[in-house]
Image (cartoon, rainbow, N blue to C red; front, side):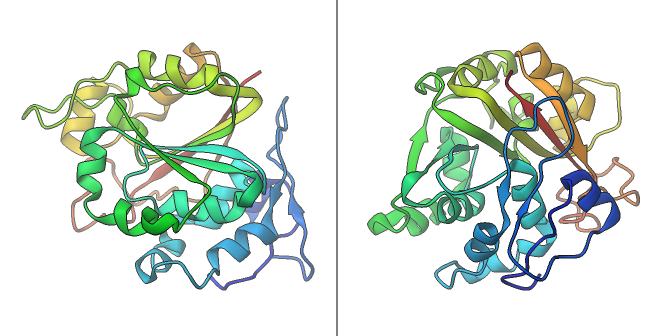
Amino acid sequence: MKPFRVLCACIVSLLVAAGCKRAETPTTAAPPPGPAATGIADVAAIDAALANPARFAGDLEQDETRKTTDVLVFLGARPGMHVIDYLAAGGYNTEVLSLIVGPDGRVIAYNNEPYLKFAGKQPAQRYGDNRLPHVEQITAPPEALSLPPESLDAALFVLSYHDLHWRAKDGSWPQIDPAAALAKLVPALKRDAVVVIVDHVADPGGDPGTIADALHRIDPDVIKRDLEAAGLTFESEANFLRNPDDDHTKPVFDASIRGQTDRVVMRFVKK
């Protein structure tokens, strides 16, 4: 992915499906079609954030496989937003979001204790010495997350939503009630706020907790069911991370598929 490239001002779903070429001059990207088009992404700000020379080299290497530009356009990322990076781990997405939202915005890097432990030294390296001044770190169990009402413009889950369903046989992960977790998040969303979820696809059927433990995947219909039950409205789905060659039977850490899994990208809106 080349820095400073600019996406054309086409609807995001068409951009994804048709591979729309970038325009010659900076523009903003229209949101995907739906009853509540809630935000226009500032593509120039996204490109500038990804090209920022202060970013870690290891992050830059992930930009293409993560399709970060497409994810952030789908989210409607722009300056001034207040966003939560949910189960942010080491903060790859948190940093890019912080560079986009700028001094008038805010990003919450939210983790529970196991996620923070998994992230190792990365949070200290990323946030130490006030390196990202627009970021607030919060660590708490999902069911105990405390956020001000109607304070967020968006929430982003990247390869983490399935963990709300995870039931680890070895006890290495706490059992979480997804409905209780969403009950803490949804009231913190403003009206017309968006939630974007990127996750590894599992085949339909079976127990979500067992599937998450064995494969770290989730059936997209489970995501949709959960978020609609929490009061959010499904708006659209993008296909830029789909991979038909992934048969969904392998754990996502299997060497033959790692980094290339079939991933769903879904967008929900709070009405």
